[in-house]
Image (cartoon, rainbow, N blue to C red; front, side, top):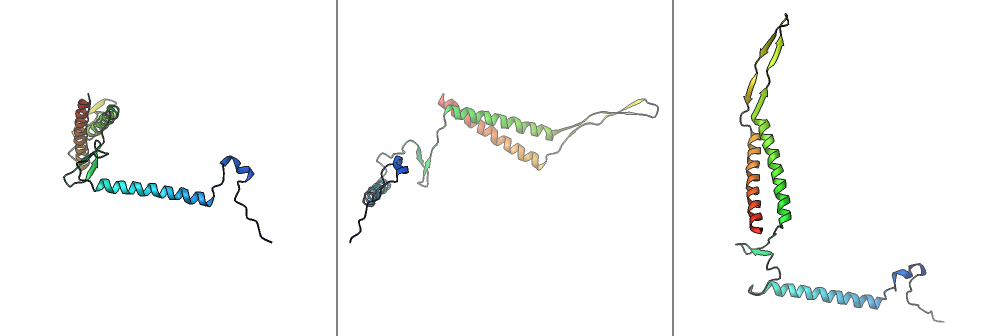
Length: 160
């Protein structure tokens, strides 16, 4: 007596997921997938070995450096540049306020009362703080921000 072997069937509760893939179908599908990968790999190798005079598919978005390396060039839109400009402006304001805190230390005048109850004014005055390392760091950062702001405004003018 011989056993009868049945093909795999989809279970009733899984009928909505479609037919079960047979082994032969799986092998065919994977062979096709492998062929496509090989074609893509071959095409990439051909592109790398071209002389460079042919049209390159990233022609508009890539530039060549002196070393021969290809570098992506990101072109910003007007909206992105506006966002960057606003961020830099707010950062400049924040840093300028920090520098103001460093520069001037105001000690207000004090009124002291004697035993008799007569008020006597004590003048404390305004003191300028000397250049500290932290203040120099903020100054350098402010200069960098001003440079980036000028670059962003130039880019905005080019777009308009």
